[in-house]
Image (cartoon, rainbow, N blue to C red; front, side, top):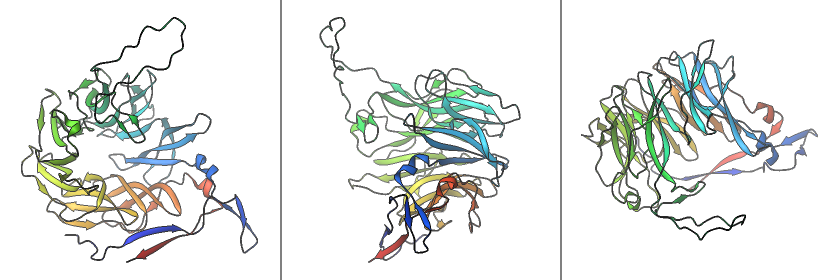
Length: 427
């Protein structure tokens, strides 16, 4: 079992040289050195969600940038060989996912009507592309079914208004302020999102060749993104499908929904949070995150395991009290890889089904694990105080070094001197 530091200390990163100085400063050598400025921020590009093809030969990923003229973010999908060679633009969009057989990718992009839609592109030389949805609202959390015949997604569905305020008749040609907004829900807005009471998140499935999406969940509740079971019969999600659920603070349960019959079963029953269900590759187990009910300001979630029917639930992360960012099953079903944020860094750990926690990577960086093969070839994003995020590859079995596959901001950072960053520990 992983043992935490017996003398925990807080870690602080102090920026000893300010980065937002005037564009040029003269160093001791007399040569001009360019400093990072706020204006450069709009020129930075981002990389995210690298995904390895099933045969391990190619990687697709999302590349984002700022449209300075229209004050919005844009993205496109790029592709490269597994060693980083032949890196090039593929198609406009974001969030690409390989089909199980590697012949297609699914992704989201602006379509018709003018909302984010789901597209499927064949990955042969022809590259035929089909818009498979015509949604009024943008989909999220897309995922291929194990047989590649369907794609699941989540989407907000408008709620029927409970009641409304009707103002007196407006004279023809009059200019009035907007009518009043009637709020009937306790949880009606969130930071950085604004009002969130316009509907409910539900789980859908659509044929991969296009067709009419089917809504699998119902009711006035929010549902998380669905995760397919290995046999493709069910999708697992978290929610709280009880009366006045929004008044039950810090409570949620794990559910399954049958894709054919839409029958929903509740798999967890304790008071507290049970979220992020993840079916095992063989389909017999479900890993998920959770915690007993508490009134603490914040508490880290543990990693739990249960049988597919919800029986034999047990904690497998023990006293490993760390902030878990993401979780994915090892392909052999021996445990889950998790990314852990701790002491100003983020690294990968492994939690076995027997409850053993081991460190996979280490270092003062922010590492995200996005995709990996049966042989342990992994890709993710890596950043540090001196290097913006880029895509890297590494070996999960022997993560000694990281191979940098992209350099999307080298054109901006060349010749730029960043401020020195130093770790300072205190007891």
